[in-house]
Amino acid sequence: MDVTNRFVLDFAERYARSHAGARILDYGCGAGGLVAAGRGAGLEMFGADVYYGGSDTRKEAEQAGLFGGVIREIREGRLEFDDAYFDLVVNNQVMEHVADLDAVLRETRRVLRPGGTLLSLFPSRDVFREGHIGIPFSHWFRKGSRLRFAYTLTLRALGMGTWKEQAPTRRQWAIDKLKWIDTYTRYRSRREIFAAFNRHFGSEFREPDYIRFRLRDRRGLAPFARLLDLPLVPAAATAVFRKLAFLVMVSRKEPS
Image (tube, rainbow, N blue to C red; front, side, top):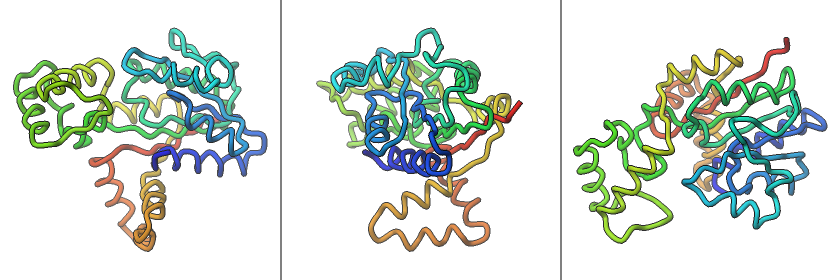
């Protein structure tokens, strides 16, 4: 399990300790690794995903025996759970893939109980590195741009770029990966993101919590986590982290 999922699991475990009987949903759960880990840790955890064409995770969830039970498919934007069913909803690197952010947040709000919590980790448009293909700034160019293609191909030729599945040539790699991010990602400005979340929730930002967790997760770096207790350091660290990685938002559904 990667460090972001470990952070989300740690958040869920701490939440469950202070909210007895909490039900938790992993929105955009993919193959269900986090759901399985959460249930293995004693959490009442469920998952949901749209299972779009750019991933084989539905098959993996079926093979794990999770699909159709603790993991449900999202159909036409609707979660197969009752109103106010969950105490906590988490999502990790999901919101940059949804076409209609307001609709997703509205549906998430529906399944959260009053006072419930939403944890979201995902990048905004101004992040430097496109995390899915590993080419910096590739998501900043106009779609279909020849300059973007040449830039991506050049960086790939220099050994940059990440992807599980390789292509027969560097050129084909650039074609395939740019097509993937054009099809399956929807990067938004921070202003758009914050406005959408504020329409449905009250939110606060927890990037320092994630940075602290990550430092403590690496041998030899744990002492540096103490720097986040110094004045001005959290704000500076947040500004840099958002450019290099993603947002960390904790949102709450206010009681009616």
